[in-house]
Picture (tube, one colour):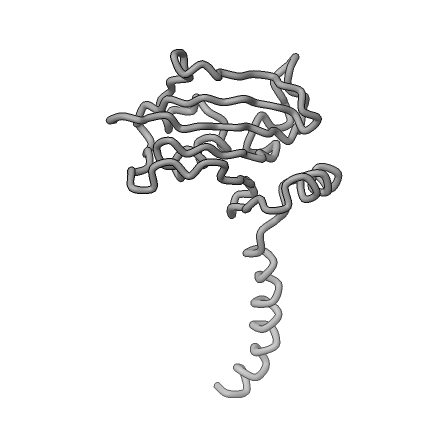
Length: 159
């Protein structure tokens, strides 16, 4: 048994080393976008999915955070990396009201909103695969676009 273990040991070590990169976080931004983002927002935090964010206003740290099924009310401005605004809802009297977890939001928003407290405002840097992906959203969002959002979570309520 020890002889077969000695023969298999190098193979087990090789398999373990080969699997290690699978657990490493893969950068989701194209190199050109990454350089721009790191220069403009060097303090942005990155999640395991590749979403980057900066907390602009902490909001009520004692409030709970929304979960799928809840209705959220937000103010937001969506921009391309060059600053072109493609969509916004900035009037507190007419916020975007939408239910989480129903496939109506891009993945970057779904993730971010579930980590925010009431009143919190974040700048989100959303890689294409957490946004509109390879298809974009013609005519305003090109294919494979890295998106920037300023999102404020005004309120959320029940399931």
